[in-house]
Image 1 (cartoon, rainbow, N blue to C red):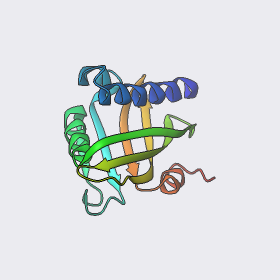
Image 2: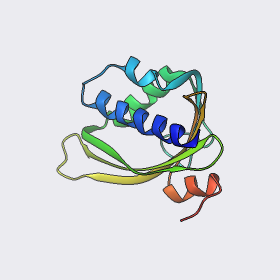
Image 3: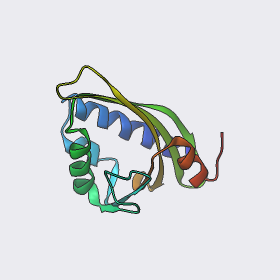
Image 4: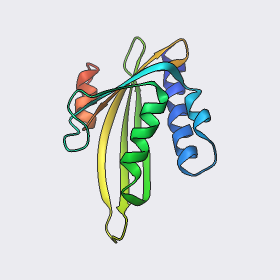
Amino acid sequence: MSKENVETVRAALAAFAELDEGLVGPERVAEFFAQDVIATFSGFAGFMQEGSTLRGPDEFLELRAAWMEPYEDFLYEPVKIIDAGGNRVVATLHQRGKPHGSDSWVEMDYGLVYTVEEGLITRGDFYATPEKALEAAGLSE
């Protein structure tokens, strides 16, 4: 199932990009997630309390909108999507945003450990650095 899990994560990330571009609605993104999906956050001080947990796609989409709100231009791209064994997939991402009223860009790299069960993402653990995500999955570069 690991190849299928990687493809599920890749398709979910593509759906988020399509949502950002206004090509699809949130229901398209929700197709890839279990209704009781859990998202946790580690290392995002100042934005999320350490160990914060969101439940369900709606809570995550609300947080995501708040995350992107300060930016007039925002994009992210997967750097790597790695089978971490079992039902886990690690995705490392690079994002850039241009804050409203600024000519400068803010950039960051971060990582996620996804859990995929029966073709749906059931958990996403966000880490402030790709290295922390790889470490959490028992992988290292």
